[in-house]
Image (cartoon, rainbow, N blue to C red):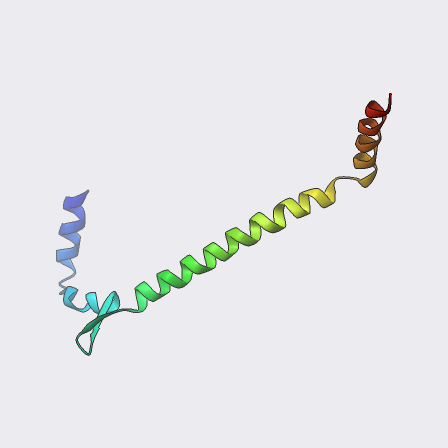
Length: 86
């Protein structure tokens, strides 16, 4: 499989310009290393994912509790109170 990939890549007669890739990960500005657009995009994606997890853990249980009929909860409460009275 690797042989086929290498063979057909050489057939393209294209010179891959790998030296251009690192600037999309990190940039050097004023003597310091700064994150490039791919790293910044990755951080934004991680923030969006974290906010989504928090919202899911808050909205999910609230939605589940709202689907339980109120009468069922009252019946359970009445049974619990009834056991304690007698």
